Image (cartoon, rainbow, N blue to C red; front, side, top):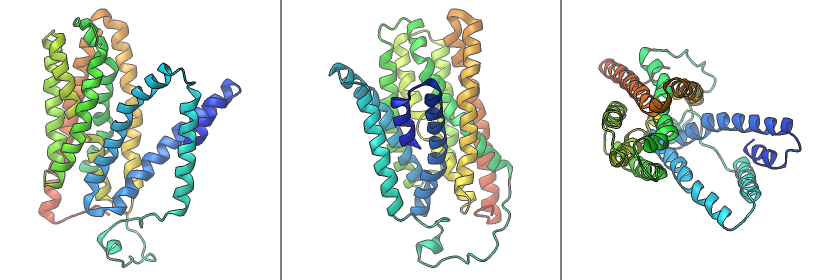
Length: 323
């Protein structure tokens, strides 16, 4: 589906075919989100958080490298079609390889690791839905909205505060987000609780946004950009996916899709709200959007606290999952 998107966008003879290619890209994105992270967690069941954070690292790495590739192509006067053709070919290769390489057994529990298969004839019990799982699913909205709003509006805020080259804010954000994912991954492997990250990171992001709102300094925005890269884009979405999937080990794709649904709603809704703020607040709109982003951080903190409370309750009762 990704290959259809790449080749379809490039060779579409009319707008209708181009729209179909775009839809194929959306379908591919949904399929990918519901498949690659669960498969990684099935392969490494004892390191779910680590592998989900590593997927975030490679996503961030791609976002960091892509602008340089585009600039290099433009500087070399190479047609943009080369990028689409290369992308399509890469995805065809990935698809062919995936057809022949084995996938880890669905469930990825300790029994599968030890080579003994669970009784497939046994009926699967109904899984429970709790305040903890609802909060984790909703974090698909808050965890991505914060950094998405920042990346969409930080340069306008930089112009408002007098920066001559606000594009540098994005570079600072990208570099710190890459480092953050690696450091956060290391800390989680050393025993840092995922819920601690889910509480502390949005709290620091909220403080950074308040600094950006109240202190009208272009230079300070570079510090804020670094803090947002580290604490807003440090893999919160991936950690929420890991925790929710751990509660439903036989339904990882469903759990991932639930968070992905909230993420998709977030991608649409926050942009619409930001557009309304821009339309109604004029020149001061970037600062008001920062305040809106601050509110989303607070929502993320509340959701994380609900998750922590649910974890503590399950630990007290000796419950590992909700299946």
